[in-house]
Image 1: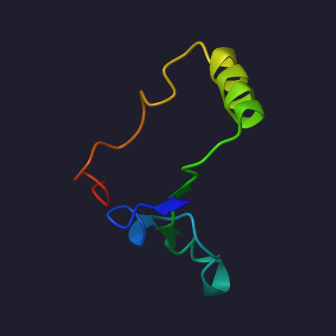
Image 2: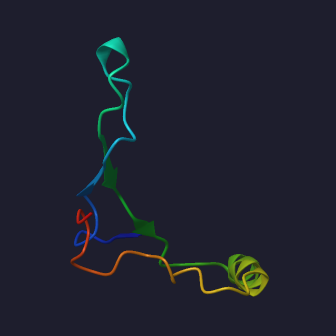
Length: 74
């Protein structure tokens, strides 16, 4: 497995998506840390399964991703 250290450990703030504030004053911010690990060696069966999953997605699953360098901007 390869860990993508450039991406691992990135922190994102989701404003207003955290725990409720005291006395019902809204919600706090949720901080999310991303860790990504990608397998480097797949068996033939695993490759077939990944290909099968890929074939199920007709839409562009990356369309709404935040572009590199724009994380944390609201």
